Length: 599
Image (cartoon, rainbow, N blue to C red; front, side, top):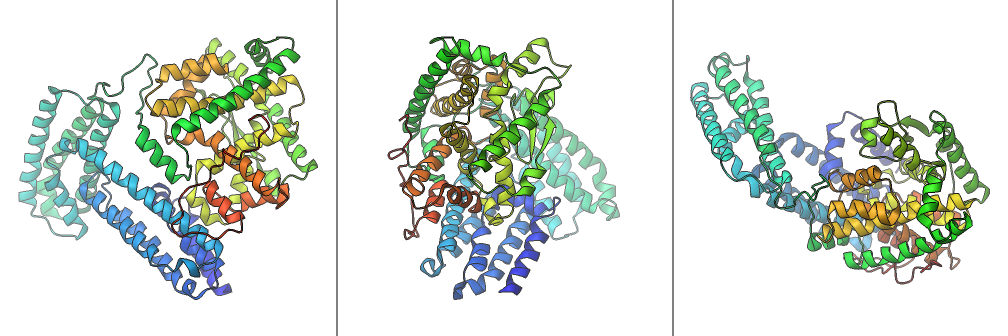
């Protein structure tokens, strides 16, 4: 067994630790989840089936790396067909494993591995359907594809014939460019961007193949230099044109300048099922509204304590104006971080390794980045949003007011300890392969859970602190309401901005940045709901395991981190003694029995 573990460790370090590893990049995009179950079986199981799976795991890693390096044009029929086959083959392999022979840890990995493969296959096929909607922009692609496919075999091209084909393709592209410029534009920027990417992907593959032969084959160089350069110029001009060839009629600009793409109810429900959330979007919105109503009640109490009566928005304005003098904010961040650590350790709420406490750091966010994210970002280094001399006076004031000490008391610990920094530290040291199954409901849910738990433990010292913590809790509720309503096509971006300003009390520029990152950024459609919903899942799980005496609070928190980033409903299975069904489907109605005083 020791020799097996040594081989696994060597293999892991070789393939996953290098920052320059193309395999790592590949796995992080499409297939990164799949290897986990096999490594888990090897490491955690002593059963006979485990002994033969190391070679299977090694083969899988080699397979996915080879596929991604070979099929480089990811906007082609060849690519979509081959990768779909890859999913089918590995789902078939997984179905052949004797589930009952696995120990519980391996069964958990089986479930999340199967779920991830099915999820990736489903959305891969969704991407394929989207691709086919705009693939008509490259009717000339087949002859160029034949060129780069032949290059893979090192086939000596008929340079004279190929030069003629390139010349004809250049003429075809120019005619197509001219024709499309007179046609109706795409009805969304997303389609225009994909159409442009189809041309760019094809262009990159052709360029690589051309470079393979150029100067190594004298005949090729003599015939192909000018035809290739003219083709390349035509493709560049065509791709540039396509990217701007749209008029947003599918989703129009409502005046906010933010134009995303609502995915609709069916797609939302599919996303929720893959995250093991057994609720409809409407049910989650209803829960968020309940949570928001409680926040308003508590905000009124804090407002009255500050002397503003029932005008809690005036209390928020008062707290915003407690911002600190420019240049002093980093030292206050350090104080807030250490204060949270002391609070946790004094109450022995979870294990905090000394090295985790030692190694967190601070960086400053650029003015450009602050326009997209006007608050903190975190992890091992907390990224601080605070104004610079290049900002307008209005931008400076919004930044300082939005990052005042009492608002930040709820977010510094969210980003550092016990939040994202501690998460990152622990996931690198406990079942690290499971980080490949990363889900925002675990990542953001854990940090949000602590905002709720710390409130329950009287972490806010003053009415100002309560206003700050409640502001962010209302914000998490609002994210559910505006993001799900947006994807259900019931709320526009401008309505979402107004909602954050009027209902939560955001600075308008900060609200605009929040909505922009939600709908035009790289976040998935469920990311914004994952904070509160994930937090409520963990809170409900605490009720089942801690409040009934099955586990201590410290052990509960440590077990969450040591099980790494997996769907919380599956985490629940891992922490309980119940038998596991191979075909398990989401069924945990965690909101029903949620034991929070304000419900």
